[in-house]
Length: 181
Image 1 (cartoon, one colour):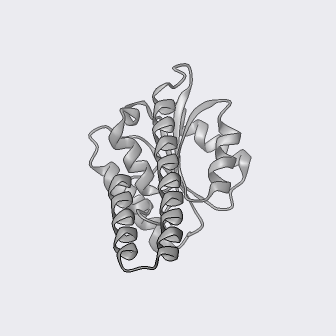
Image 2: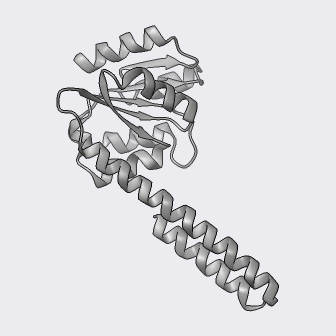
Image 3: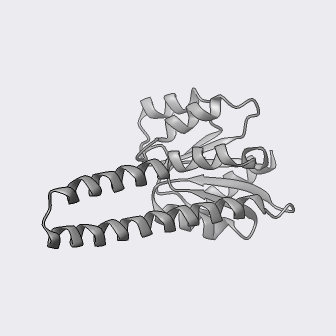
């Protein structure tokens, strides 16, 4: 997917450069090179993260946190990483990509899932997980606590819904309950 994006970006820059002045072409090349470097760095980090996920501590249970908020992701990782292996996903698409390219799903004991995210939202992830033969418990954390959203989430057999902002003690207790179940 990232390779396709990189190709589209490069093609767009190349098309723009054909009818540009020499000065504009130079500026476009600089921008193109910076974008290429950023995308390659992101791809390397994603590959490193996948490698880390595969080298989990077998003595710990494993939790995947899927949330587009870096504050929530990092906070949950901080409070949980002493007791659990923690795998982070930036959004639904990142989670699905990670689950597709590794055997990590079979090692998961709990998925903590935000519902409102760009690209693929939490319901898209729940649809993807429904296609799995083995089921992993999913706990929703969301700022949307409308009746409609809650009912829709429970149709996917989620184990719990925690409203954001959440209480640290309460969420740790809930996580322990579902991980040990």
